[in-house]
Picture 1 (cartoon, one colour):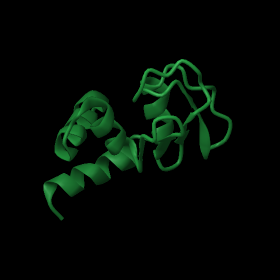
Picture 2 (cartoon, helix red, strand yellow):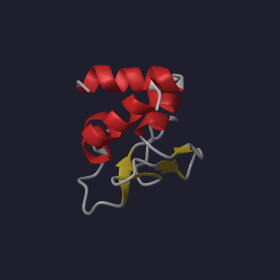
Picture 3 (cartoon, one colour):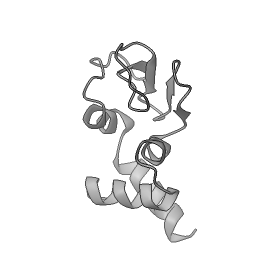
Length: 99
């Protein structure tokens, strides 16, 4: 296994999607359960009405039904939101979360 995949494994073992989204999505509704929850305002377009953006607190997947932004985990969230490559997103997560 190469260093990039090892870092991905370490991040996923250390950082739960629930904790990540609690910090990154200040408008997210208080989570009830561990599956799909209302993520608040979509960070990928000028959203003014919560309710179209959802995140999965188990997998980290996200989906906006207004702008069609979607991805499978917290790494792809950072890639899309911040315009980062896969490796840049991993490094940002590792640095910011102390992995």
